[in-house]
Length: 463
Image 1: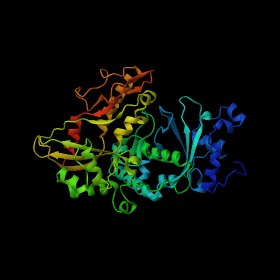
Image 2 (image 1 turned 45 degrees about the horizontal axis):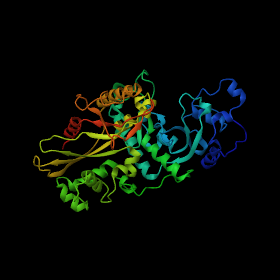
Image 3 (image 1 turned 30 degrees about the horizontal axis):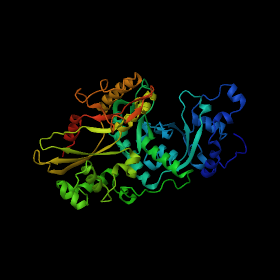
Image 4 (image 1 turned 180 degrees about the horizontal axis):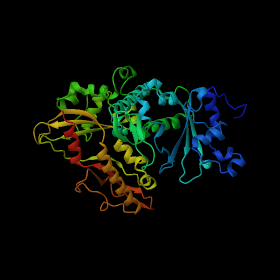
């Protein structure tokens, strides 16, 4: 390390200000000739940034990278969408979970919190196959978790730790939590790890900030420019307050808001909540559910601060009096370019959707064919691991057809194929087409849950 650094190593703000000089540049511009000639650039991108730009010696110490400033350095990739917009490429991996040790750490003294409570986030543009020295850095953010986010992250951490303490590290899922996930880490053939309260081995996992959470950071940064120490303030579309989170989990707060309305007819609810039903809008039941969850603020909860950061999805389901469900459940249209480019299921958009948490709001008909629905139940749900395995097969089948340019209904899984998932067209009209990564245009198709799978979920979570 040089005796005189071009920044104050004890000041996070000084380090962040110095990092601005990396934006719009690549590490090759800061690499000495002998470094390149000797084949430098074999370590992680973060290590290379420390060595080449911040003039730090690489080390394996467990504390934060900028220890004297109490700040961790994280380099995280972006990609460009079809309209050249910047998008989050993946979750932000924070640190490996040591199953044997983490059960003895409370949140405030955990390795995760001590390293990541303050982070210098350097966003760079990912280019497939490019040398790390040639990746361009675009955005630098000094990130401290907002107080409300920290309360949710703390609950997430405790959820993960409690599952390990229950001897269920092998059952951990990113869908267990909201902002902080326990993502799979390592290669498929890596040996599973010991856990302290079960003889069953568990795959390696790491604490990570979910793609949805990283997406909100990126969108805020693009909108507001360079960050400062205050980070994101509480949004107007917040569902819960920090005061509420001090005593209850986010999910318990939301579930408790529904309790006074359980068993009430939907028309009575609409009147009380001032929801207009005169035109019987298609999203009427979702609007009623949003009004309850938001305490009559009448905004779509799927667009609330907490739902967006968590990747949470609310689905309002109508169950007929005989227990059947007419409609299958639609998700977003397939991004063919994303499917084409990505060969890793765990980094796919579909994995993010299906492994995230869901909130189901159930309205049940009382008399067959009468449409006299009442609010029957509400619950949060995570797709079980065995169903996620089926979803991976579903994704692989879709990807195979995209790669082979078989983007047509005849090639995809259909509702009658006795699977849990299928593909169905979803477009405004025949002229509403998508870009085909193989060239030209193609029909728009959408991810779907089969209606019998939705029925199974509802039945298994009935009161």
